[in-house]
Structure formats: structure tokens, C-alpha cells
Length: 433
Image (cartoon, rainbow, N blue to C red; front, top):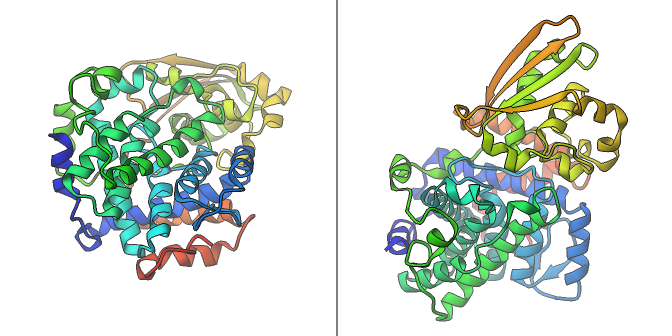
């Protein structure tokens, strides 16, 4: 059984058994998520959620707020806030955002249990590894049907991370996975709205609930992922992507996490990087037309042709290209505002952008052709799907992003030090502030 094999692999994992490079990526995931959640706490959706739950008291922190709420509420709100800007990490192996559902669930449960920093980090790795492996096994058909993998696989990652903290046995872990399978949800139809971040929060909360109920003996079918009339049959091809899984079976999938440096859907980033490569050839005053060529699947993710809001613009290849050419800072989440997207100059540039498709490209590969005012053609190509090999360089880039997101709200240097030294923390409660 799948759940049995996964729990045999990860139930007894310790932080010292995690390779050094993977440990570092896991801490980078935590640093990046904290920054995104803190910045996301200033978004309208965060205010709505905090107002809804302000009368529920508990011991768990809400990032960027003085609220103390029950663990499941903290997982929900923090999960939504961490994905509010769509600036959090991603993974082409998983097919979604790995940290978004796992970290808020693990932190909330960790606060309730008074866990150590090393326990938190280990649970994060367990959650990311298991949700990523299930993401591989469910196959691309699942996402193509309209399911949001961050939520549908993330609920398993959140359940697994919490299950590790609760020290569940094999049978109880199977119950947790079965419960999670029946709560796997989230539709791509809601991309570009507040409900996309809700998917991450919902997965964090439901994953936590699954593990906690299982710990009390609440039963389920442990084969609800791959079994008869399970998630795989109901929402994908019905067959485990075994060959794809074999490709990654000996790897730490946490190492495959990709970090965002532009504040929009990750699948728009290659187009942005192409235009930045072209420099003056893609300058607004010199550019006559832009053709962005991508895999056809991107049209169902970031293919909004004429966005009217900042949220919609995050899922628009045309808008991302137009903003880049016009010199807007795409690394700044404030660029994706309703006012900027309503600007006539931006809309005129959007109308100069054409999106074509080429099935030979992967989802992270993009080709951009620019025709300048005198008719000369300029081309660039970029692939954002390659994990960093230089973790020092990645750390420096993430530190700048961290400063940019955190500095307007809190003392970023003190918070950075707390994250850097989390392994030495004996009790995670109050660690978030």
C-alpha cells in the first residue's frame, strides 16, 4: 500500500538524517514563506479572515497580527496569507506550491505541542517530500483537468507534516491520508481571485484536521489516493505515474523547490526573464510587437488575455510582458495593483503582446520574439524550471527578497536571525512573534 511505503520511509526521519543541502533548502523555504506570509498579512483577504476569526482564542500565532487563535484557525489564516501574493515557492516536480500548505500547518501544530526548531524543520521536509511524491504519482492529467495541485496534494503534505509531529503509527497515518483524500479540493477556475490563496489555507487546515482526527482513531480507507474509486480515478488518469516516479525515487524532492523573484504566477517568469535579457531591444519606445510562445497548457493557468485587476494580471502572460517592457518592477508585489493594470499605457502595451503555443516547450520554457520600430526581430529563450545549484547565490537573492517584503512591516534583520538560528530553538511557541 502506498501510504505504508511512504510512512516507512519518513516516519522516523530525524533532522540529522536530512542531507546538508536539503536542510539548507528547507530553511530557505521557511524564510521565504515567512516573508510572503508577513507581506500577505496586509492584503484585503487577510483582513477578512482575521475579522472572521478574531473572537476565537487559542495559543497559536497569526503572522503579522496580535491574534492568538486555535491551531486549525492559525493554519487556515497563515496558509491563505502565505499564498496571498502568489510570491511563494513552487515545484515543477510536485506541480504546485510546496511550502504554502505545509509550513502553516506544521508551525501551528508545533506551537500547540511546544516543538523544537529541529522538529519543525524535519516536519516541513516530511510534508514537502510526501506531497511532492504524490504530486508525481497523480500525473499531469490531474492539473490539466482543472485541479489546483497546491491544494489537492498540499492537504496530504500538511497531514504528513502534522502526523510526523504527532508521532502517528502506520495505521493512524493511513487514516490521516484517507481523510485528506476526501478533502482534496481546489479549482483552477478560481485563479486570479482571493480563493486561490484560500486553497493553500484550506489545505493546511484540512491536512491538520486529518492528522489530528486520525490520532484519535477516526477511521478512513488508507488507499483512498490510489484505490478503487479513489482520488486517482476520480480526478486524474486512474493510473499511478510509476515511470515518472521512478525518475525521482532516490532524490530528495525538497531540493527541487523553485523560488519566485517576480510577484506573479511562476509560469509568467520565463517571459519576463526573456524580455529582461533583450534589454533595449524590448524597450517600450523601441518595441513594436511582442510574441510570447509557451506550452499550450499555460493558457489554462496564466492565459488571462485582458486582465482588469492586479490579481488577474498575476495570471496573464500578456500583462507580465507589458509591465516588464514598460519598466515596472515585477519583483514588487505593488506592481500588480488594480490602478496600474487600469492604466491606459499598460493596456496599450498589453494589446501589442500576442501569445502563441508550441507543444515542444515544457511548462517552464518560453520563447519571446520582439519586433522593433524599424522591423528588426530579436529573440530570447529562458527556462525557469532548473533548481539552483549554487545555494549561496540563492540565499543572497532570497535575502534581498526577504528584506524587500519584511522591511515595511517589521525589523527584517532580527527576524532573519531568528530564522537562521531556528535549529537552536527548544520551544517554537512565540517564535513567530
